[in-house]
Length: 367
Image (cartoon, rainbow, N blue to C red; front, top):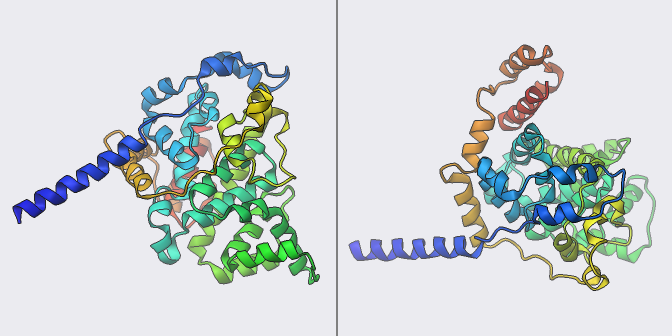
C-alpha cells in the first residue's frame, strides 16, 4: 500500500511539474518597444506611451497570477494592462470585473457539469465574441476570438457569426432565406448557441436591438441563473470594447496572426488596433499563425495552481473585495455610505453574490 501511495504521488507530482513547465513562459510586448511605436497624433494611446507600466512591474505589484491566467485565456499578457496600471484603480477594477462577471475559473473548470446554476466556457466565449462583433472594437474582437478558439468553439461558427445574426433576424421576422451558407452555419449550432449569439449581439448594439422573441427563447433554454452569467459576459465586453477602442489600444501582432483567418470580411483593424501591426513588414502582416489549441489538462492544472497558490488569483480577489458585503440590502447600505446612493434598483435584481460584490466594489472605487 505504501509503495502504491508513493507511486501515485510521484505520478501526480510529475504531471503537475510537466504542466507548470509547459506554461511557465511569460508572453507580453515589452514596454520599450511599445514606447518606440509611431502612433498617429491625437490617438489617446500616444499620450500614454511614455508612461506605460511594464509587465514585470505589474507582476511585482501583486498581479502575477492575474497575468498568468489572462495568458492562459488568450495566449498573451495584453497591452491594455500596461495602460490601465498607469492609474492603479483602473487595473484594480479590471481585475475585479473579469473573474467576477465571468464566474472564472469555475465556469472553465466546472461549467459543463455545473447544472442550471452555471454556464460553460464555450457559451460564455460566444457571448463575449458576439458582443464584441456588435461593438466593433477590433482589439477586443480578436482577443475574444482567441479566447473562444481556446475554449473549443468551432472556427466556422466564429467566422460566420454575423451571418447567423442576420439569419436569426430573418427567422424572427418570418422571412424565408435561401442562403445555403447561412443555413449550413445555423445547422452547426445548437439552439443554445444560436440563442446566445442573438442575445449577446442584441445587447451589444447601440441602441440595443435585443428582441422580445430572443428574450423568450433565452428564458426557455436557460435558467435565470445562467441568463445572468450570459448577460454579465455580454455587458462586460460591451464595456471593455468601448474602453479599449476609446483608449486606442493597439492589437498585439501575434494575436492578429492567430485569429485573422477566422475573421470574416467585415472585420477591419481600424487605426487604433493597427498601431503595432502597421509598423511590421508586409511579410509579417500577411503571416498567419496556426489556430490556438483547445485547452487540455495542463491548462486546467495551471489555472488551479494560479488560482489557489499563496498570493494567487483567489487571494488577490479576496484582497480587492475586502469589506464588500454580499447581500443586496447590505451592498445598498455600503454604497450609500460610500457615495450617497444605494443603487437598490439594480442590486436587488442580481442573483449571484459574486457578481454583485464585484459591481459594488468597482462602483465604490470610482466615487
